[in-house]
Length: 260
Image (cartoon, rainbow, N blue to C red):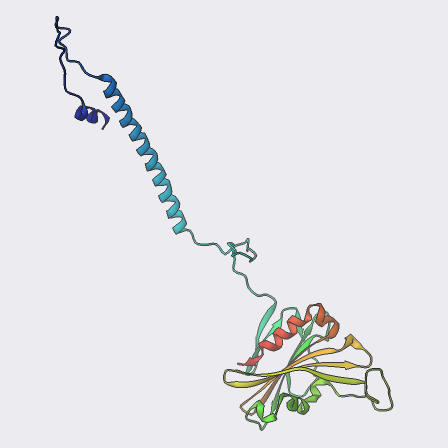
């Protein structure tokens, strides 16, 4: 292309007017201009080649970006990156599907053979502390709905065996307790909600005993009624462990309970 450009753009041949010899009659060209144009053309070709290389590199990079999937290790701002590139899974809990119910159980809790209550069909407890546990009961009932028991407080009075009965009888005067009473139960919170068209009661209770065991127990009770059956889930932890990390497991377990 360079030589062609030169031929296309060369200047007309000029003959000097004062020619005294055949040598002087030779056509006079302007090589400097031709050379300049040839250099300019070569420079343009170099620039074009460089542009072509940059364009090719850009295309390759763009193709690589399009053809590469976003790795799970790429974390959004404020999130921890998964350097192994595998999706995270919640290993803190294991799903449990029972007879007509389901819930999540802490992965470090084990099944227990202890039977505390009538109608108990499930009990799991913490590996390190049996005071942290969850139980599920299924009892016959003539109620059509949990609200037929009255308010959450009235329902709790009908199933107060869940909190444990005071076995002591006699004269006693313990600090912070009424006369002849060595255990108390305080309702901290109650609520009702609807899941799958069924109403549920949720009750949070703090029980304390005179011996000061664990500083008391936090007990979360969720209950509902379906097809002539009363379903109750009770999860609990000692007061000391409650504030050392057990709370999230107890709340998550009780909150995950529902009819299957």
